[in-house]
Every structure is written in C-alpha cells, then in structure tokens.
Length: 192
Image 1 (tube, rainbow, N blue to C red):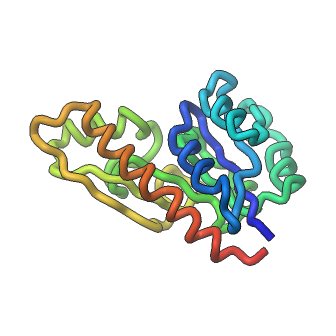
Image 2: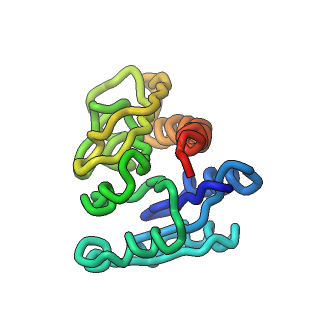
Image 3: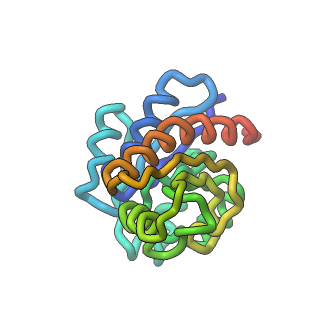
C-alpha cells in the first residue's frame, strides 16, 4: 500500500513540483495533498497541474483549531514534507507526526537558521559573512525553527564573483537533486 504524503508550501513551490514529479509514478508513495497558508501561492497551480487536491488555511485555522490535523488524519497522510513553508509547525501536529515531518533549509545548519531566515534572507546572510561554501540541510521538524535533527546536508562552492542569483541557483540545484530522493528514503522506513 502506498504511503500518502502531504506537502506544505507558502510560495512558488519549485521543490513541491520536483516532489510531485518524483512520486508521480512511484510504487512507494504518492503526494495526496498540498497545503498552503497563501491563497496566491503558485504551488496551488502546480498541484492542480498534477491533479493533486489542495487546501488553503489561515493563521486561526492552523494554530487555534484541529482542522488541519483532522484533514491530514481523514486523508490517511503518513508523512509531511515542508517545501518553502514559512510558519512554525504547531506542537499538536508535531505530536501527531513524530519523526514524520521533514523540512529543507537553504544553508548548512546550524549556521544561518532560525526565525526569519528563509529564501533570500539566508543567501544574503551567507554572502555578507563571505562564506566560501553554501548548501542545503534536510532536517526533521521540531517545535523551533531549523533545530530538528539533520538528515542530509550538501554543499556548493561560492566563488567571489557569485551574485545573489547565482547562489540561489546553485542552492536550488542541490535542493531539486536531493530532496525527492531523501524524502523517498525516509518514507520507505515508515511502517503502514
């Protein structure tokens, strides 16, 4: 029986798209739902293109009700993947899915992590620190931003001439290459 995955995303959803492509014909797992806190997020169009149902929620629904947790339970979701989702996951959801919520961060944690460190904010901080390397970290989600146990890290070299767009491009290449594969390896370990 296939494992059922839910993707949480807040924006464009390029990593979500790579996950949708990866699991489209998988015998292991399927993307069963895409959730977002942003009604204008392009990830909704990507989900629609793959005929994957989506759900939009607001801050009240996410933090003050059990609606999102109930929806995940009703759809038999086994594993949650964060793909550019910017809100902190409520403790109740972490308790419902222990060791089954994963995130990707566009830096080598523990450096350049925490509240407000996402997207360009991370890349600009890496550039300002004149780091010789950038990278990605795939990690489990806990009650704090970017503090969960690391699962996988990959690095790329930053050349002195690299601008923000080049650093973003290098990082995104690593994300798209590794995230679907790492998610699949974690999902295979889940007992259904």
